[in-house]
Image (cartoon, rainbow, N blue to C red):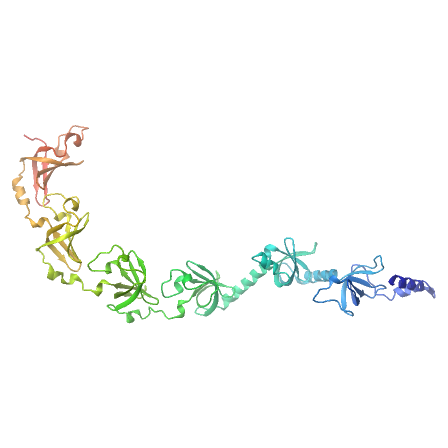
Length: 534
């Protein structure tokens, strides 16, 4: 029908008027338009597949209805800007494109107003290989790696949504743009972080959400800026792990403790919301006060007792009992036990309280002067031995020490076990009592008179005596002269040929004649010689 009408018009127009072609007159009434331009038109008909546009030319143009968005469908009489692709197709119609016009206008606008690094808003149009196409006025490519999505499901949910993007690359020659949602999010987060750092003040109360939990504390999102709530600032009381008090996703109120603007760090506190219970601790629990608390932790050196929330004291292992010696506090206490104790000392500055359990009973050392007297004989049981002596239990809670040097007048004792056995009952003499140091010195040899005055008379210099070899060393030989009495033959007083060892010459237990060189009663020593024996 359009072709027939056009044929009739051409027949009329071919007639001339005053020498001027009717065609020339007719075409002079049309707008001066060229291919490749953007022109204005009006929708004159909306069909199921096409939209007919009048651009003021001798024939109308058509645009596929798909070039119009579902949100803004074409309406008859609506003005629209279109791109003129061709003046005529095979049917004589003008070939137009609304999408190409929008793209060209978009590029002109982008070229005039945007540059790499700018932020812009856009809507994710569709998914393509390697990412998405985003409408920011023109189509731009959003790589999947820059989409800022953490899962495939989240990426699928982006389609149709509007976001802010950062222009990362513009290629004007190829007319393509690459954008990044991830970079835009990071920039906004950084801007928010800088803004928050400038707004926050020390001592300010703020709300945040627990973002992450570690062994040393919790990271809290303050709305674009993360702050650290250290475990030591969570509670005045004991915490083994932050998860005992907070969980990821919790919304909590915290106090700003410190702001490091140079490094973008904020330290937070939660316990600071309540008064420090240590401020008046010495008034509340004076030294000597009896308290009741719960055992909250046990270490090899003692047990921690919670007196009240945020206040703990330590009962050292040495403060558990006057009379019994514990190798570990768990022999007496268990976590959760409610016990009584006495306040021994308070260190407010370092927030420490020393407690004692044995102080609930009388100290047996208070009566030690009434029970024991220096010079008295006393019986007891060997409780323990060390290299330097043996501890003898005189009564429950009171021990005395027999030093190795007080075990024999004449015999050299290498170890207490050479004389005593653990658990053995033994009689001793009290040598000294030091109540303040809680020490009692005992002696075994003092039960008999000192024999050295008699020894010096018996073993005079030059006297040849019989003895028995008891020990061979690299510096000489020990000779037993009588029971518990030994003398030393120094190696210089032994005639020995070069290259010969003492062990090859002499045997332990072998009888031998020796000569007395010198007796030193003060040193408890007898010097002997194996030379010039008649």
